[in-house]
Length: 461
Image (cartoon, rainbow, N blue to C red; front, side):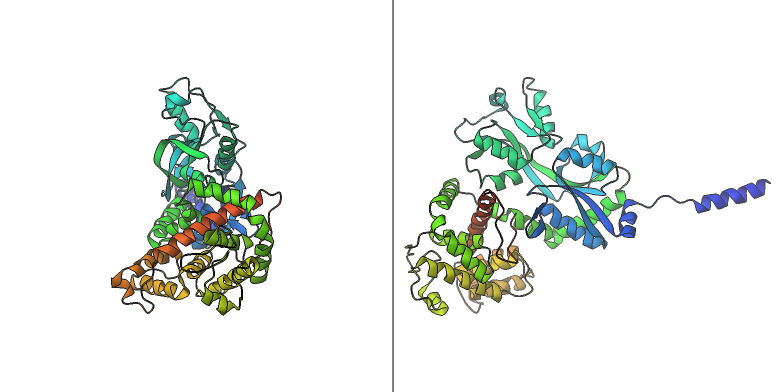
């Protein structure tokens, strides 16, 4: 009997197996469920479809696993933890900081980004220079975020420090409340602040509360180690291949340069100058398949929307067409604003067509803008430099590093089209990206989202 029992027990044990890991479940079902935050720094759903830095990365990860991506978007950070602990989501990709309180329930992967955490105030209300200066001022932050942890830590040495936590608001809304004077202060990550300050130019950093705060994907503790390990391998590879840098540039590249006076002037000119020319920008955009707001951003960079603008080199009009370009386009009077706008649209569309088919958006648009500024042949030269350096000639990041080298003899002497002030198109593209982003935001405030006239309009988030 003992032998029989041993055999039966061994047989039963042999038939029992541990449940499949979350990674195995993802692969077996062909579905990766990811909870993320509805935010410009994570995920947004616009007229051209989903976008956002977290979305781009996790989409690549899902494809790497051979699984379909299922995005579960939430409006509050407080909604993320329950979805992970219930098993409704396999992982979170929502710009989460790695905090001790979250480590009680979650495991974090490879930190793919770092941010600075700022205390934000409005210009003219008095800059707080220490925590003692904020004790009698209203502070509001998002609930269930690392910003609450920071305030609780500061409260240990400043017992009278108080704040309000709001679970029904996002970073952009909090920054808007500071800008309009509804609250005195808030806390924002540098990524959120760098985007929103272009819309609210009176916002300022009072204090840096935390520097180089790591952000990482989060996984349920004890049940998703295999998926976490696969995600780490993917992100480390993405870092080495330049994917992380490309995604960062796509969504934050335009925020690097900020000019307070220039931003205020731009918003003022949007109201005073643009209305006269806007119908022509819209009509030209529709004709040439270009988002009219991108054309308007080019026009502002070129002339600040002044029809009589003339540069020292003789280029004229709103779109600053050279005489040779005007002749090439068949334009008789480049000072006429309608002619200039339609000519600029046609010229930009042709530059876009000349960019290699292997270049995807938004890099294709940035390269076409650079060609509009410096000439397509110089962009071709820069692609050669990238190839010589072992980079990716289809990447705007790599190209933007190569273009300034066209001003160095050791490089331009080897190139078919010679010398160029290659740093200028890089700054040109950066400025237009910033103007375009502000224009999208301003037009979205008009009541209903504007129609995109271009099928492939770049998403700069």
